[in-house]
Length: 503
Image 1 (spheres, rainbow, N blue to C red):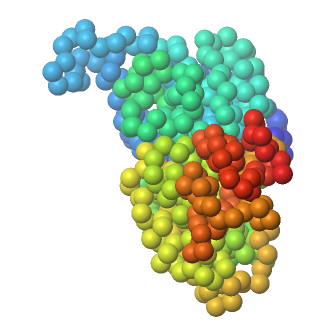
Image 2 (image 1 turned 135 degrees about the horizontal axis):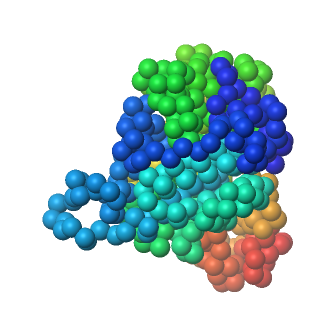
Image 3 (image 1 turned 180 degrees about the vertical axis):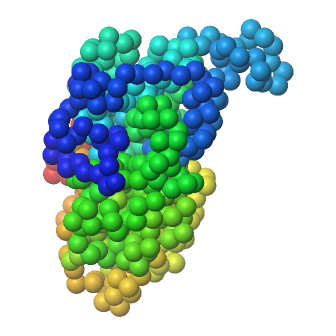
């Protein structure tokens, strides 16, 4: 997979150093390119990370030094008595040997490839960062969580070369699988979905022990920081946001660029033609119109000024000739089907967002309907998925206002939806609800049993939401199919175990 991803850089490589000469850096090549691993103490790492304001590159941008100190505060490490918690007695903390360092290599989002590239081509750089953090915390327990087969093979080979006591855990490839709580649950052998209740990994993570969890690029950045030192590290980027960042453009190209680089320079390097809109930050990110794209700068502050976000470094330009509203509705449908189904904002709120977008597309709905549907569950979800989806949708209605006006007047903009925004390749197990209209008598039982997928029109007949059936709804759908009085409810595609797997 990584061989098909073109990798380039702007202003000189750091994380991608050696990529121009080697497809993959084994241990000897890594040592020749990056030098011998150095492992400073905890205080030195914290000082360096604070000096360059090193932040997580998984999307949230949380300060790495604070995360490191939060884990250290939970265990006995040299000097830790200076930061005892209120009411705590000496000797009450766990042992530093119990601490776990987790490399979050989950990239469940279809438009992201940077972490797969790092794990596949520079696994030792990532392991250097993990080993630096583990050594500072006094532990040898390192877990690398990955979804991709090639990345898993690459990391296992690198672990073998280093003879280090680390292990690789395979994750299910889903949009929400990269959320920190999902990763911890997967490593612990539980259902890999967000836990629903906020639990800091630093307090209770893998096996209930304090856990330092950061994404792949963050650990690679830590290794580069320790190798270069904070002054040289800060020679790239801006004064407030030093260093480089990894970006995935269009799902097919990975670019390493200094923070502060204009977005248009990245698009030009990737030979992206003029676009009606660019999505920054991925499917939980925000859309920028052409004017904002010209002004956008790749930094937290620069993106905020134009209403965008760097997020996890995903940049998805929209191709001219495809229907913008159709593309947004297509992705919103995917996001609705990817939820964990643990709360009302996901179970009912996201399907309502899709329905409002469908109505907007055919001219029967309004922008206010979309805003109302997207705003109902904001801040009330069991995880960030409903809020992220709402952010994606609400930014779209602003960026594509002209296209929406055409839909409202003519029920279409005249452009087909080509499906240019990346989605996972279908596995054949996806299923959708369908109605056999030669049988349906409008009993309405299906809308009662699966209101997330079916609602009744004003005449009492079912209106089906055109999304894949979420995994958490499979039993409910099978029950609804079996109980339909007219035997009119069907499943097209495949739900394993369903008596109506294919119609």
